[in-house]
Image 1: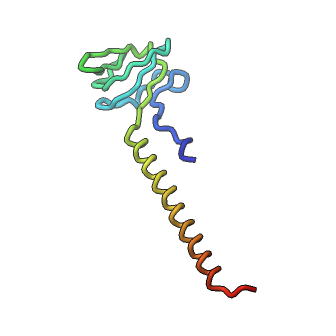
Image 2 (image 1 turned 60 degrees about the vertical axis):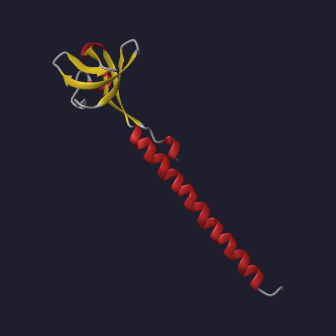
Length: 114
């Protein structure tokens, strides 16, 4: 169940959003895919009429909106939280089942043989 949860969310898709970049916010980090599926990871600094402006490793990056196919927001923090919650649930289930097993064995020893 936990493995099916995605840790990235699509913020822009050419076929669905058709030029509407309203979900893209300055100050956020995105993976941007152009029409040839080349990937650029940028920290967006501004959204202009015709391009997305940002930085990648201290280099200024400008990508024309007409060349963008997808923009994906990576959610690393969500991945870490999901893994932590998953481990806690599995450990909790183990502790409960071990307690049930130990209790059943104790009851079995306390009952007289039939």
